[in-house]
Image (cartoon, rainbow, N blue to C red):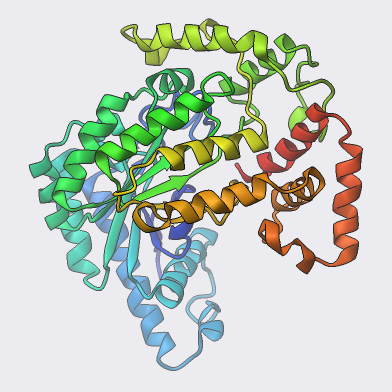
Amino acid sequence: MGDKTFAIGNIRPPFHASSLLLRWTENCPWNRCNFCTLYRGGRFRVRSLEEIKADIDVVCYYRDLILERLRDSDPRTVRRMGDISASISREEKHCYYMVLNWIVSDKMKTVFLQDANTMIMKKDQLREALCYLRRKLPQVETVSCYGRADTLARFSAADFRELKEAGLNMIHSGFESGCDQVLALLNKGTRREQEINCGLKIKEAGITYNVFYMPGAGGRALSEKNAQETAAVINAIEPDFLRIRTFVVKPGSPMWELARAGRASAGAAALPADAANTPGAAGAPEAATAQTDTQDAVAAQADTPGAAAASVAALPAFSECSDLEKVREIRSLVAALDERLGTYVISDHIINLLSGVEGFVRSDKEKILSYIDRFLALPQQEQKEFQLARRMCVNVDYDEMALLPENYRDQIRSLVRRADTAEKWEETLRYYLRKYI
């Protein structure tokens, strides 16, 4: 059989679970966001055209092999590889199963190009790779990738049209926020001006555009501003999809240190180094003393050249939003969206509390707001039971809790009682949330 492998990265949007994953770049060219640790320690590299084409050839090899085997066997039998070769490497098995899942579950319709910013490839190189992909895999309907706003802003509308003609018809961009102050706090390395610039050109070219938004990314001090200014960016560009990704402070990230300082300045005990593995923490969530300082300091950075590269030491303490405050921020954003937008808002990640935030702004805005309001109006005990169930990865909505077995609900109620202060409660929720990032 020989060495039949192709490069596969670790990160992709949730709805690309069954897509074919092809790694055309490695890691992240920026790799300095204060909230992210996904690519820390990894060296960024654009893979050569020769490597990319060789990977596509291997995919074609497995595609043809699997399709031939499927003619005579069911998918369960085809999963076995022992009759192909007695010595198959672990990497070859991974590639084989990737293509098998793509054929059976996705019907060979979608391809996602990894890693964090595939759009940083030179346009001619990207175009040639796309053309080769489309020629070798003609049945593919959607080819998508991630692209940072600062990278995307360098392309013209004509460039995007050219890439669409070559086969790229969907782009995902992690804006996280449309507020320059929040972007500076996150050390995102992008600006709202770039978000609007690239968004308008991508839409003009007819490429499906997915934008990601992080409620809570600005902390308490900037929560409402994060909602209002992000909504203004969405209103300006009207992306096809607005995908919600609730902000969670990850251990080991620079934001983790800022959040620890925020708890200390608010009068709560600073998080211990091993707090990621310890549910519950003492203290209260209020951080009024840190809010004004945070807003002023981050605003100053946003107006200063080179602010995106500001060191964590120069930033003020970060007061993390509570679970409910993030929900209220989402409500503020949805309320501020223009009712004429054709954008589809969707909460499609387990990290989000309310999975039912979904629909077209144009036709479903009031339905979404009503759904959020019904949750916020629940008695506190019912809210907490649902919050904890959801954070423990139970796939129910807040109006479906009665479907859970009573003994399981009793366990949830017991955990709710044990988190008997506001800070213990929020830290219990964060403990479970951190398992998903």
